[in-house]
Amino acid sequence: MKEYLLFDLDGTLTDPKVGICTCVQYALGHFGIEEPDLDKLEPFIGPPLKDSFMEFYGMSEEQAEKAVEKYRERFREKGIFENRLYPGIPKMLRTLRARGMTLAVASSKPTVFVRQILEHFKLSKYFKVVMGSELDGSRGTKEEVVRAALRELFDGKTIDRDRVYMIGDRRFDVEGAHGAKVESVGVTYGYGSMEELKEAKSDYIVRSVEELEQFLLRGTEERGKKGIWEIWRIARPFLLFFLVKSALEGLVGFLLALLGSRLPGAEFLFVRDEEGLLAGFSGNGYAILSAVGFFGGGAVLFASAWQAIHERMLDSKLLHLRKEPAKCYILLGMATIGFALGLNILLVFFGVTKGAESYQQVAQRQYGAWLPLGLFCYGIIAPLAEELVFRGMIYHELRRLLKMPSAMVISAALFALYHGNMVQGLYAFFMGLLMVYAYEYFGDFRVPAAMHMGANLLIYLLTSAEIASKIMNVPVCMVCIIWALGGVYLLNREKAIF
Image 1: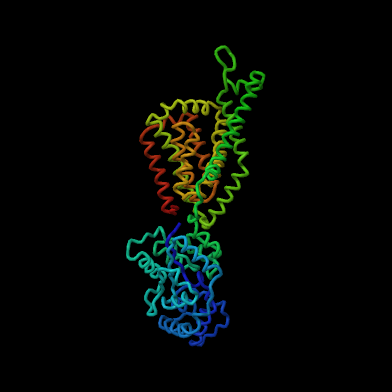
Image 2: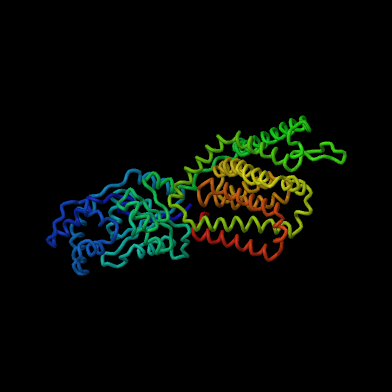
């Protein structure tokens, strides 16, 4: 959520086509240029007039200045009011102010005209700062306008650029925002095309006033009271998943034990005692039971989880209109591998794994399975089922009630508690934080699911192949952690989501 919003005027708050294009016609007529088609003059909407006369009609600087004078001759008296508000603008501004945001206008149009237009449409009351160019030609670029607006908006104090959006419809707005080191939001309902805004590298692009309002209000939703019903909505998916998983594992385990030696492949599923009697399930047996349990628990929740994921996807869509570049996925892969290896080495190095009897029992069962079976169960089925529950449903419900940092920490803590032992719990907590971060960063459920599977497959493979023991040392641990932190740092530099 950004608290300071700078709006362009023409093509963003108002549609000035008739007034601007008619005044351009008037100015061109002074030079003997006839242009009856107003549509051909639309490129004049947005950028500084002087630059447009020079670019589109090859005028010298002196001629362009004269053209601007003739333009303003008509604009002062008539053109300024040949204008209309885009539908939904007053409502959006009222809502933004009601949610505590501070609004400003940063326009290439002279400030005196901007103020007149805002007064005409009764919008002045919404804006703390109104900034434009000057009639004498100073503050002539959009970057200069944006920087001046920021200085006034922050009353001369340090400008917190991470809390600012510049919103406009043309590449000049995007370039001005980037020049002032703030994020840009391009709107395509004005006079800039999607292609123009993408080429200018607008940070975000929206297609309507309604979509712009939804985008700007992200993170400001009124949070509901955290009563028993809300707690139940969070606990229900976990309880259902856990009960179904446990029941299926118990039922299938009972049936397999009942059949015992008569079952084909008994030696694959069971271990025998010294007398040759079946004494319990082998690692393969536990892997099959776990796979059945995870599959059943995930299947029961799939419809509800898919609905929650779809809702979250729609909510996130407005924040991810611009596709993340491939390097962001590479950086996330760096962080995932680094943390997966580094955390495991840390836990071994500090003796946490040796002192945890419950973990030793779990590890013995999991790593005692036939490698392909173990990879399938603990590297694919288990992560997918757990992601449906924890990121798909539980995090979705937490995000409805809480702001991102709180929802992130609580969901990671619940993910840790679910594992039932200190070793896996500590690992799950930190990886849970990273997976939620990735979910918010990319807005795609498939990303944390792929991370979870990738980390599990990597650790299972290294441990089963006895490679892990060869890299359990301080230098490797330090490299992995620094590698992971570096990946997150670089991701955050690309786009800060908090």
